[in-house]
Amino acid sequence: MLEQVTKVHDEMRQGEAFGDAREEPHAFSRKFYIESYGCAMNFADSEVVASILNTQGFSATRNVEEADLIFLNTCSIREKAELTVRKRLTEFKRLKKANPSMLVGVLGCMAERLKSKFLEEEKLVDLVIGPDAYRSLPALIEEAETGQKAVNVMLSRDETYADIAPVRLNSNGVNAFVSIMRGCNNMCSFCVVPFTRGRERSRDAHSIVSECTSLFNNGYREVTLLGQNVDSYYWHDETMGETVTFAILLGKVAMISPLLRVRFSTSHPKDITDEVLFTMKRHDNICKYIHLPVQSGSTRMLQLMNRTYTREWYISKVNRIRELLPGAGLSTDMITGFCTETEEDHQASLSLMEYCSYDLAYMYYYSERPGTLAARRYQDDIPLDVKKRRLQEMVDLHRTHSLLSMQKDVGKVFQVLIEGDSRKSDLHWAGRTDHNKVVVFPKEHYGLHKADYVMVHVNECTAGTLLGEIVGN
Ligand code: SAM
Ligand code: SF4
Ligand code: F3S
Image (cartoon, rainbow, N blue to C red; front, side, top):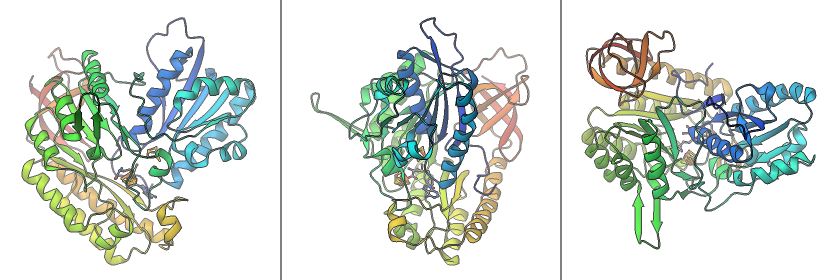
């Protein structure tokens, strides 16, 4: 599948069903089933939704057949993401026919984009709720239970769900996502996010630190701070006269414990500062890995995309990262076939990728999104077969870089955070290095547990995994 990237990653997961594995208190009389699509922020939102539903007496189930309430938390980023959701909704038709009292709701970005039109198009949908309206879930469920269609897609300028403790769904008990901001003010011309998620706003810094502290106290050893543009995080407390930038926030979270690994995503090249890079350098537990989406290697394309930087500016950022954080992992997002892209522009993207030699790249061909600046101003004029051919060339090139990146780790020793059994064998652990690479190694007889750190010597690698053995802890 062309649109798929070369490596399984967290950024754009598809249709993962979440259920709470814990024993359920008796107060829960009804069950909800939630399936999430899109970026990590949507997955984090599903955990806020789960928390709100728990207060209403709903517990999570992994078995859709026994659910009283089904939610799809949807993504609109590309047309394909929306088609997947529509297909899934038709699959729920059968269940709804068998159990007419079952409610089906659409949450997230697609709900926001299509609003009440959804109810007309998809007759079986009972609720449509946008990303800033989850507090109204209890009232909307009540309304839907009386047979009315329930919709709330109001976007907010200040909602951050700061006071809601997310209920961790499908968690391995080691890594957790923590939302630090919502929305986006950037208006990249191809992107639907500013329309589906609204204006950018930062969450109260104290609530972020306290959520991360409580995760650590509950045994978690890695947090990923999430936002569409984390480097523009800015929180000001009028009463205390306190201002917290992203660099300050990173430092605060890193200081919770040296045993807590801190990651973040996503950084916009125009906003990542030296202050952030120095904070990363200062704290051993801030992972030396930066996701720095470039989108294109052609300055002309970047201008049309409204990314507000040039190829040279981006390269200077990458050079600065390599200077201050030698050996740091680097990943990116790329789009092929954006409006008017020539072969020369495409070659510029390939040569930029050659220069940066990314450890990981998420690559897509351009998908026009209604209502965006590009859809209104430019013609989607690159034929699909050309978009796909360029994407394939990019994927092939990146494959050589990611393999090189894996091979250069063979023979080295890394500190690995154990995340659980390897997928293939419970005689092996799987964990990650600071650079976000998966390492698999035999458990042997060290008496180690999930969430422990261990030193692993890498003996060999595949395209996506390092294979090694324990050399100490
Ligand atoms: N906020 C991040 C940033 O600034 O790079 C990324 C946000 S978006 C959820 C993830 C990626 O989807 C983007 O970096 C871009 O590569 C891709 N994307 C967004 N809109 C797209 C579109 N219309 N067609 C194809 N890919 C798109
Ligand atoms: Fe979309 Fe650009 Fe905002 Fe990222 S920074 S979410 S690509 S508008
Ligand atoms: Fe998709 Fe919305 Fe995220 S459009 S990528 S779920 S912000």
